[in-house]
Image (cartoon, rainbow, N blue to C red):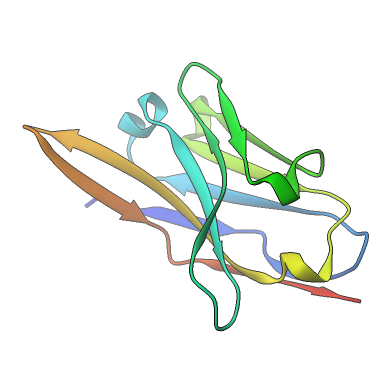
Length: 119
């Protein structure tokens, strides 16, 4: 069973930092694009950042310059370093990847980790 397990969330004051981790259960994820999404209360889940296996990154405009996505393939782990946090960053953060097998796409989500930024 493929699993993604997030950690590192918590309560932080505005302007502070947190680093989220997403540990994958299988090394196949090292060849996949890894993503972070977030869902604020009463809102839809939205894309935050992605990192392809060849190192290309993409970010939500509102987090550019503040968030950095990275990966450690030896640990099957992807990170989201979040600096200068704002109250609007408060959300549950999810790790996501997709795997194609025999022409079928499989979606994998973590359980989420809560980030709360106090103003």
